[in-house]
Length: 263
Ligand SMILES: [Zn+2]
Image (cartoon, rainbow, N blue to C red; front, side, top):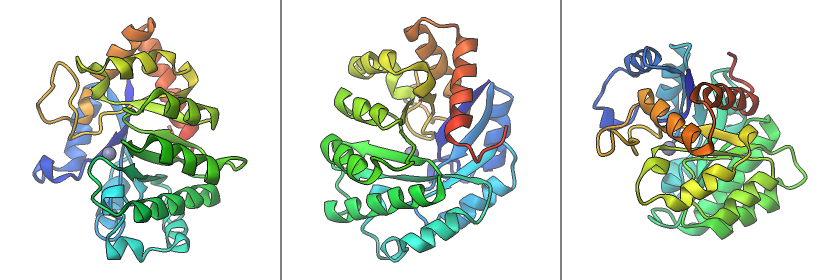
């Protein structure tokens, strides 16, 4: 059985499909549990928490995606607010996704950085793991992680890893996990595969990022947490281990990092 460490069950692309039903279907297809990731605290988080509270195989996070880091309502959420909300319910197992996205640049870069630092500080205060979104911003992500995180108890995961090797190494040096999505199965993703073979077995996670990035053989279709096994089996073969063993390892890794989640 696999754990999908990163999906978006409430995303509009699911066209109102019942998140609990998506989770149930995934559970009958080898995906034991999942974390539905928050992108907006001001308007998305309450309903997301509700989804997690109502299903024992779904956990959630709290955080502002870099795309929304410039929004007034998100900027109004202080570090203290974030800490208080993050500690308000045992179904909240992480903070994020937060980070920097210089590919889309939907929010001014200084505001993305400000939000990213706020999330990191909340993680240090709450001991919850940070879920990091990094796109075309390797150097700044690494710099902020080192500045804010070095010498602290900060832990986290570089999600849907698609950055360069240097950022993977910086993350691993800080004790971070690296998570791979269906992207690693894509034909043109040799660079990601080269990194995926080298991540230590106790630091690797799998995810779907559903509804995006459906893995081969479902590429181009809508992704669902049920497909995490395709990425997991692909990675197991790439790394030369049995799929069962890799499923167990990534599940153990998940519970080590997301320690508020109970088996
Ligand atoms: Zn995501």
